[in-house]
Amino acid sequence: MSTLTERYVHEVVRRIPGDQRAEVADELHATIADTVEARGTPQAERDVLAEMGDPIRLAARYADRPLTLIGPELYPAYLRLMAVLLAAVLPLTVAAAVALDVLDHDDAGSAIGTGIGTLFAVGAQLVTWPTVVFALVERSRRSAALAAPWTPDDLPPSGGPSGGGTAGACASAAWNALLVALIVWQHTARPYRTDGGERVEVLLWSGWMGPIVAGLAGMALLELVRVAAGGWSLRLATAYAAAGAVFALPLAWILYRHEFFDPAFLADVTVAPAFYTVTALGVLAVTAGDVFRRFRRAV
Amino acid sequence: MADEDLLRSQAQELRRGTVVLACLMLLRQAQYGYALLETLNGAGIAVDGNTLYPLLRRLEKQGLLTSEWNTEESRPRKFYRVSAEGSRTGALLAREWEDLVTTVRRLIEENR
Image 1 (cartoon, one colour):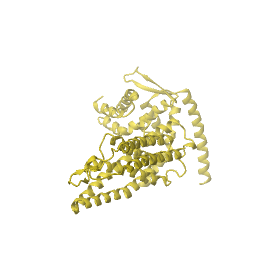
Image 2 (cartoon, chains in turn brown, blue):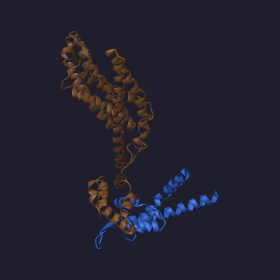
Image 3 (cartoon, rainbow over the protein chains, first blue to last red):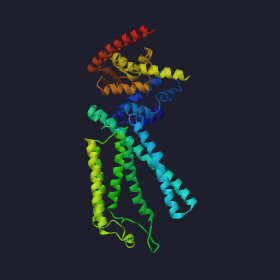
Image 4 (cartoon, rainbow over the protein chains, first blue to last red):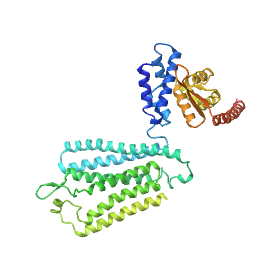
């Protein structure tokens, strides 16, 4: 048999689970050879492979895998989330970026450039991350559905995926993402000008910032997962609690140690000691409250 | 043109389940993939290889078929045959089919 069939079979079997590859390859070789032989024309091999069709599709049939990224059950929630993100969050973000630029440079050309840049950069992020999260949830739902039969206990808490919870979750996710963006922005853009004219960061960029940003990003992602899943489950709430702890504990710690602001910034601005105590306690209380509310909705 | 496509996809939807039933009946005698495809098409059950071959494998995974490689001839081939459970399932599906035909025929005649 010539290499055309071999290439085709290889393209199919490399997409199915490893333990089935050898046997499916042997079987495909045999059936293709049988079919080609029965046709007996010079063109037969090409024709037969063309009829077998796209290797990706055939592999999906062998592996019993969906050919969709986001299936019909999750699609309405996905569409709703995209509508909120692209119709509300994106224009607001672009408007805010343009306004900041106008304040900074007072130059129409620069403001338009920033507007277009933000539109594409933020737009790409807004489309990519929810899509990735929904695709992962789609995959995990399929395997979970195979493992355990559905019971009424699996119903999402009252309101369901179409309830007002979606908008709230979108807002929480957008808020956490905005905080992440602000923290990273103040690190890269150094927006504060001291009296000496030097540009400095507002926050002290220490090793603690890593977990704080990761925790915030985790909380934002879990809100998106919650939209896809249609409600808080015990597992989701536990993951949210972990992300909340990763965010809030280091933040409260650096506030308590007065290591929150950059020393260069503090040389210019006086911060009352009470600010640290109040903010540290506030961060802990708000995060604990958020976690508690999610657990209550999960049970 | 669009009507023709619609009709074809509806007819395909109707036929979908019959391939499984036909396989469970035909494979009381062991056969290999291509020969089974020819038998099915010859019997008027239109099915493509890229549908039938993965289907056979799935039925085997579900325990309804068993398989064996035959290496006696020039080309090694995988022969499928119904298992005891596949035979029982086939009989139940056959009865289901009879009921369905009776019901649908009555519906058609009553509303002609």
